[in-house]
Length: 83
Image 1 (cartoon, one colour):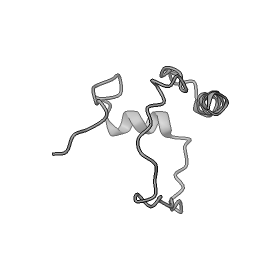
Image 2 (cartoon, one colour):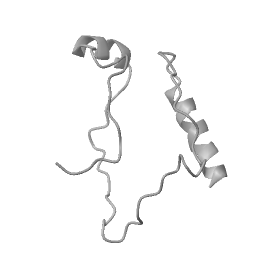
Image 3 (cartoon, one colour):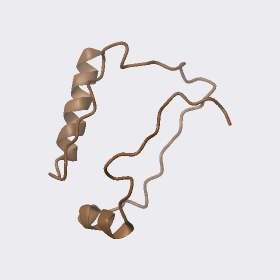
């Protein structure tokens, strides 16, 4: 296997069953028409560590409050401002 640049580990969701996930995600519709466009890897820039550059904040645990959009928005705005 190749060398990874990330760490994986267990968290509080690691042992959830499918039914437990469905209880949390019951009101989240899945857009099956989503078709992402990928960058050409030959023209993409090299890796950037935004953490060491101080451009992203620490990971936050939003719990089950349903405000993932707010966490995502604040993080995106913080990073865009920092960059």
